[in-house]
Length: 93
Image 1: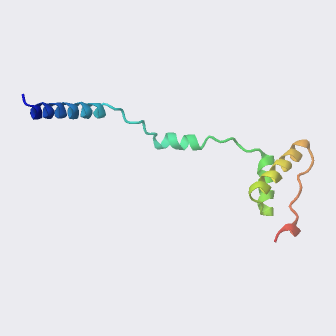
Image 2 (image 1 turned 30 degrees about the vertical axis):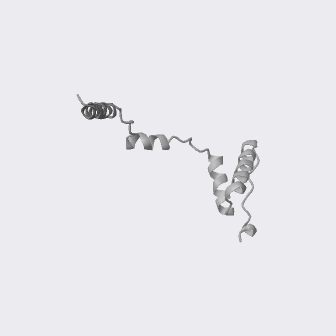
Image 3 (image 1 turned 45 degrees about the vertical axis):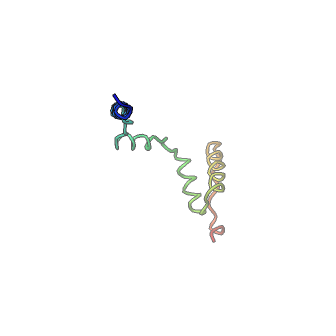
């Protein structure tokens, strides 16, 4: 055999080997739509205090850190038994 024919045989053998290797690689398992939505819908049920504090924060137009702080204090007061602070109408702009 000449050098070029040996080179051709080696190249052909390596191409076949590489093709077989890639063909046997398992594809990653895809999530079904039902499984994907089930992962997203795993949330806790919200308490009555939490819902009421959210409504008050909405009425005040609070967003971001201010909203979180207000809700945290509101829920703490509601659990302590005191009335949650009412949303004053004068604060609206």
